[in-house]
Length: 292
Image 1 (tube, one colour):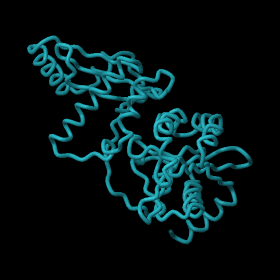
Image 2: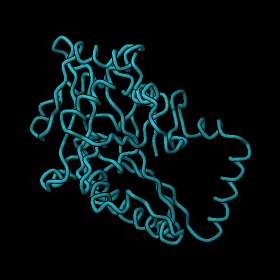
Image 3: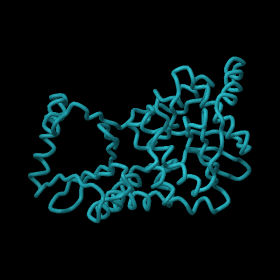
């Protein structure tokens, strides 16, 4: 860290009072502040930064925080008593190493801090990370799936963080489209032609049906089948998925598919051929943004 940033981080610890939320009870007590901050932050279109998403994750993963290897470590920053920063982290003990990760990693599509900061204040995030690392005696901070334009990305860039990989986000902004027909018209002629050709070929093999469902009993069954298809595909390709290796990954998605009160925008799109599932996509809607 350069000297200028070091000075800003020290200044940040004076500007903002930090604390670490380490229990599920404290997490639930943070609900109103989290919701309020989420609505006025740049993260408001990202369902993976919402209180509801983290509640769903913790409902499934709560047993982890009793195994002695995982510790809830949500950093909360208050300025003049008002919550203006939340970094949803967990401390993981692996052999002799203590590492701070996002809550829900590697299941969550994105990790993100929820913050109401000015454009010149990303150093406050760095101050929050430093506070967590020092307080919990963490050896490393490993943040996966950070959006390139987020406040966290800006803070990490200033600190010369090492980026392992860049990938395009599987997101679609549906703002401005009044119907599926309008969205289809926005695609290139080549893509529309390809879709029609593939649909025609499927139709020649039997009865084809495309459906989209929100949470419920039917979605739970379809999600179980969709994850089985994905697992089979990964095995055939010889590909290893960290998410699928996690034993709580599938129960987590089953829970989202079943729970109508989760409020995370869950939906599953399916294509069936003669009532047999042949393709599926699990996604989440947050405002006008769809993430697969």
